[in-house]
Length: 166
Image (cartoon, rainbow, N blue to C red; front, side, top):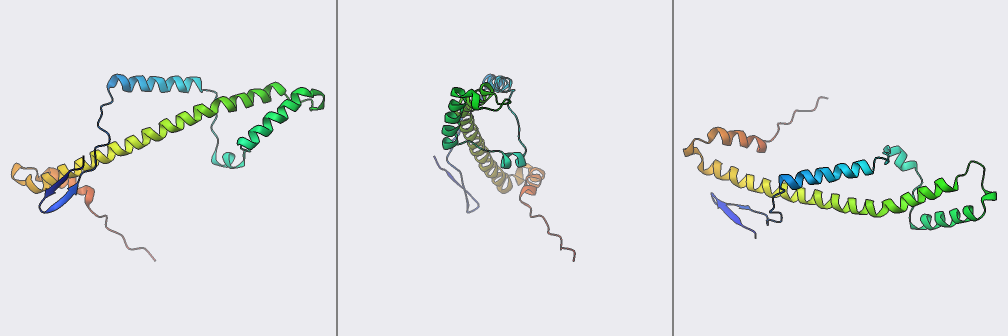
């Protein structure tokens, strides 16, 4: 539902209430505990610096198919491989890559939905706060709310620009 509230011949439009729920303390704690389990189970994960991310060879669908076929060749013909080559380690890396793909996709989807929900909840709360501020500003003087309104009005004050030094 979209509501329009009119104060002093000015309209403040309220957004549709897309998020109207309570995250219980029990659910909040359960989610944090589940995230801790994920951190523990994914303790082997590494972090890369931006430069490392740019430089590392990345594997996509075509590269994955190539990798699978090349490692099959290595398994079938170990006599061709250099002495330092570890077929087992390469297979473990490929298996890890394959298993992490659906995990990464699910986490990305969850992260996106959490961020979007947080954005909507914040936007709705901010819209409601602006209505409350406008009402206090327009009608709160007779109730002694001048100090509160003054404090809230600082959010909307323009910062004075300093002239640039030449």
